[in-house]
Length: 317
View 1 (cartoon, helix red, strand yellow):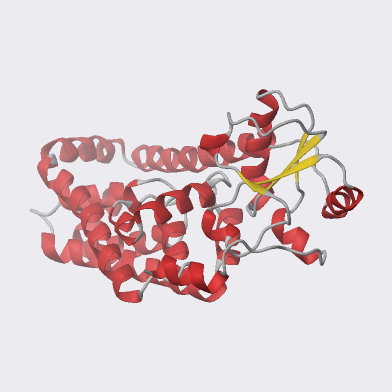
View 2 (view 1 turned 135 degrees about the vertical axis):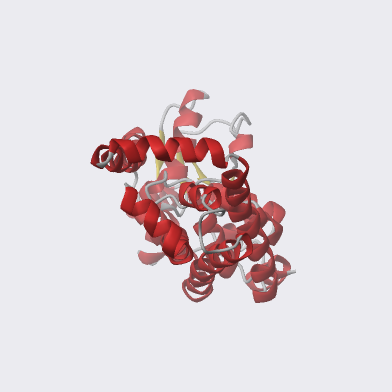
């Protein structure tokens, strides 16, 4: 434990930079506590508060800009990939889209204070064509607010932090072990939350082939699209109606079956809405296995209510 503190005191800027970079790149290694400790050690360290803030912001910006470029190049596919490797629930894409599309680039100023939002928001910013200057401006402000608050808290409560560190030092190897256990518990809790979430989503699915057959035969089925307006502007299953979480209580009329689809891993959003519709009294509700991507991959048609180029231009504005 003593060696860790000496490392922070002597090489605090490097430690903070690497920690922030790794965390913002997606690894479950919290950087905020290290920033607080680094802030508490300002008086005994060889670095200044401005230098500490600068390297933290640079580390965050480097990772975020990488996600931004990935989103710009690979679009929504990158969002799906990110949620597949994330320990956060798979509905994170839909939630992030809702926040970002409502507030735009300024939402990046608070992104790092919202668990699971920062990396996905950066990818989404690139995917929807947010101008590079706007992204960099608001991302730098957000990183400065996030890192600055941790450094300020560390300096403000330096006495309390020092006392806690003294206790950990006195415990020796046991103190380091306790910190390791705390990190493992954090990661394990995230993993367990995801596992429970995926288990909650387990229910019968309908395949694109089955759905196409139902539509061709004229079965009285309602097809529901629960994606964001941005995603729906890029095409949706013919005849599908749009439904958001706030519309769940709306009576869609009688139907032999309701098919719900999205474009997220594990059909997360579709399964959640399907369960809510069943609670509203709809007897047979099934998510579309693989969502819109599986439908398109099977070669079935999609329809457009809004011209995709017009929608992209409106989003950039």
